[in-house]
Image 1: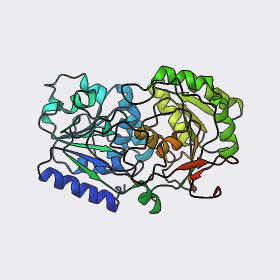
Image 2: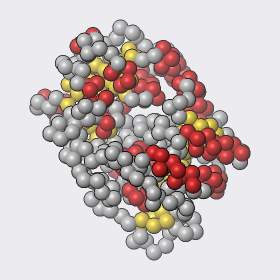
Image 3: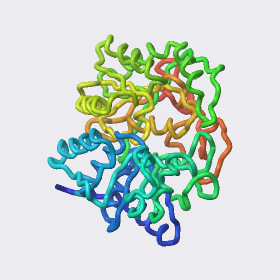
Image 4: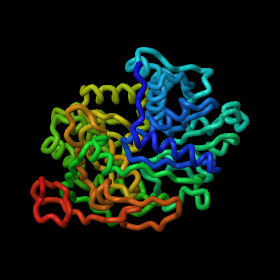
Length: 413
């Protein structure tokens, strides 16, 4: 079995992480774009550790991805979770690598945050662990479940990883504000990785819509309030438009659609099927074994669409995805970039990822590869994309719906 070889920027990130720890930082935050290999980077750090470590994720799909990354490094590891999750991870190991790397007594562990937080603070895993790693670490705040979980490791250094160190509620991830992070390490930009071929180029289409958001309020978390948002989306014609524009722009491509709620997801999946597109709906309510099965079916092309509700935005890695359809408006720049990134994983034959934005997310937040500057400080809520140094006014072509800069006189598509 050939071990994965770290790319130059991943090696540089690892070097800087160790430097920060040696310089006295307790908890380090690594910022790398979606699809850049954050999991591979921290899995290599866990592989090299000679003391117990645990990687923490907040969804079972992400736990299984971390488990597979460790298995690719020949690292036998614990999987802290329900038997169904352990079986799913073991099956993933077997399907790709021919053997299982699960070992219940290993000092390397992968765990779900909800599993850990239910354990007692004096549990052996908390006392012995010398490194915790938190995936999607923009969730890490003092007092929330992620923050409370990592505080249960009194003897450990910390490493958080994220593509977007920013929150819709404006809270700061630094220890001096609302979070637990001492030092932030920023890797290459999304545009740099696209230029170097590590991420796919993209094209964006933003068809006109009749979505009326005038009655939709903002929640304390900084995103749209769920119930008013759901009502606004369901009053519009977006559900029918999603299928029509997929067939017009991306027929036959493997894709995911982001829906506003379970009812909408079920309806859109049915609408896809009525037009001959193999599709299913999936959400947190879907039993684990069915979720894993549907993802496998999407990967091998048996399904062409998975319509999901807040499942595949963060960390989900499936290079086969060619198109993302956005039917869920969001004020969260982080969520927007995560959803956008699902289509940017390179794969054989993919010339570009495609985004079909039915709800104005791109026009609100700007292009995801615009130059950004990040901070661990708090920020005020604002309409401009957080950290955007060079905002590019965008427009949508009235003929093809392609999104392009206002500085261009004609649509390039």
